[in-house]
Image (cartoon, rainbow, N blue to C red; front, side, top):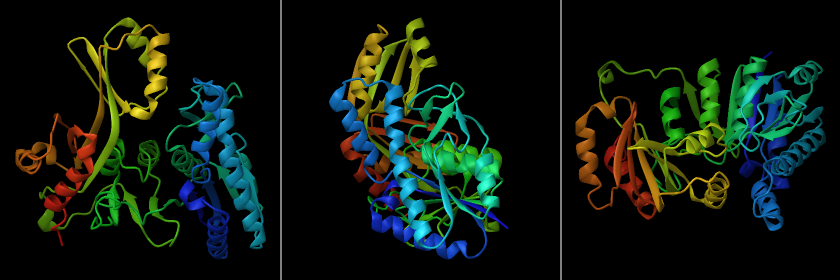
Length: 391
């Protein structure tokens, strides 16, 4: 009997009708006899609404109390889905992250998983129950409730799949899988049936929102089969695999696999001092990019964190040498493209109409910094040239 872990995001659980629809589909699958563990996010917009409530009270709310508040969102989702499954005639039980045995470090708001001891989930599966787990949350070794930060529910799902030695982990979202670009920006973006872990890591590191990089890292490290698919159709989506199968004639062909993007970023240039280095050791926010040059540290972070970042720097008596707002990134991802100057040449030609500020690369990427306002047009231009003409 197989163990299948299924994760449902907030848009998939955005209303009672959607929750009941998922319960109905799960009931149909449960009849096949597999053991099912369902990981849920908070209902759509719930987390943002809870954050807004906290900031109505305090300009700088305690990260511990924010964790206590935000974990309420997933508890609502897990209980409602469990009730819906019971109405479908199936025995189910819901657990919080701490009840599920997800043990984390002490970093409130962006905790890292140290261990998983999900014996209660195993016990309930052995009784034939469907288990629903609140994603995004865990408990520290000091018994403090913690949250895992952005993409935390994806990370919860893959971590539990690893512990349970699941046959498969399915990440359900509001799109059909992983596309060659964001289909909301590029209408003719193509669904990718299979993608190797290293390339989806490069995409997720550079702004792809379909699955979080921490979840992919878990899957890659422990070789967990993961499929990204639609919660509205349950149709086959994109499988994440260890290595891509190439046709003989394609053995050394280099091409752009997909294009990632990120908007609304802000750059902070800080002095490279002992205070700055100490702050980075205890940093809790996601950093999109960083560079260190000439005794200066540049951090590029989503601008929605600006107020908290400035408060943190002020509290630690660290001066900001320079800031720049309105930054965006467009990233081409493909095996070997960074080694082939013809890709750089064509990219420079195609991007002549745009105000490119910086170009850098990593193992499988060419990364363009440009004004955030130009990102969508740049993605469309590059996709049309590099991918759109492919059959």
